[in-house]
Image 1 (tube, rainbow, N blue to C red):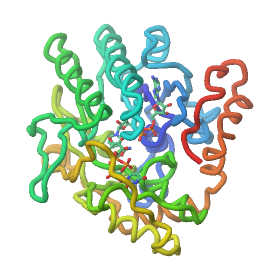
Image 2: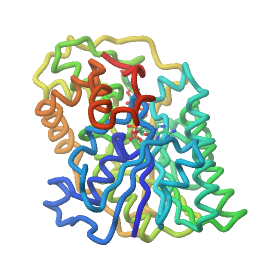
Image 3: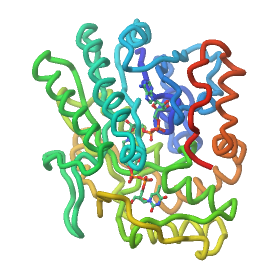
Length: 356
Ligand code: NAD
Ligand code: TDX
């Protein structure tokens, strides 16, 4: 099988490539092996969030290929999909706060980019896996869980663009018989997450004794899952998910931001007084929580990483990989592309690294 992984230089996409070519120590300990019969082509435009360091160990790997290009570019998409059986679409603008000031790039990549991929998948009769999010359902009160049948009610431009993409995927299944499946997962954490998202922002900020911004009253609740468990779910859905189906992905690990941040500071060994309450995110969803019974009962998936263990491992990863996030915060990681790929990556130069 040949899989095209779009957005494979980002956080979850690169974890998925690791899963296919070289499972993490956590997964290896649980008996997961690399997929020897599977080759991978990554199509990634290397936006500020794409980082070739995430894929460094696969340079020269016989089952791995990297193509720099946008999912909005039909020629790049067509080239990358040559010989593929499956496309797994991770490519997206993924940060809610950025979508509040630049909705256009979210609609362009997340909606129209997905449409370009869908057109090509239809004409090549590929299996199409859309990596979506719980944010498409909007916000919950203190009780209840989202099921796959909950109405779509997105709050942010990011969530709206992901919901629109999900609707397109469904429409292509009905209109053209596309063999498509969708996963909707909660908040991921783990190694190589760009340090603009809550967990890596707090860990790296605490390691540097910076002020840590907690939005609103800090009581918003998220449903956390280790990225390796998410990747395992995606692989199960790619293999066995039923055409046209949506699968929620959750490890049922809800935590308020306040509780989570207290735990992170304890793990890093820094005091709570680094935390600053700041004004709330506009349209801030109060609570996400998913029922993932379909994935568990139909496909036999189960999460393997308990939140407390996963958070401790994640803090250790950021502690031991300071170079990775310090290069991002300083913007030096963009020079790394230049060194590796020179002229071919001229377009990635000078982009806003977004943090630091
Ligand atoms: P990320 O921001 O870390 O990575 C996104 C990747 O997509 C980057 O490598 C970037 O260069 C690439 N990209 C962006 N625009 C592109 C384009 N036009 N063409 C090709 N590549 C492009 O994101 P992530 O956190 O790894 O999320 C991956 C996917 O999973 C997204 O679709 C996101 O909506 C979804 N998701 C994320 C989470 C989470 O908690 N992070 C949870 C559920 C679903
Ligand atoms: O500095 C911060 N302070 C803070 O209090 C940041 C960055 C976030 N927060 C809060 C907002 C959220 O309640 O922490 C929570 C998590 O925030 P993010 O890490 O930005 O994630 P979220 O907005 O929940 O969205 C994430 O999960 C679903 C991903 O970014 C999405 O790509 C995914 O679809």
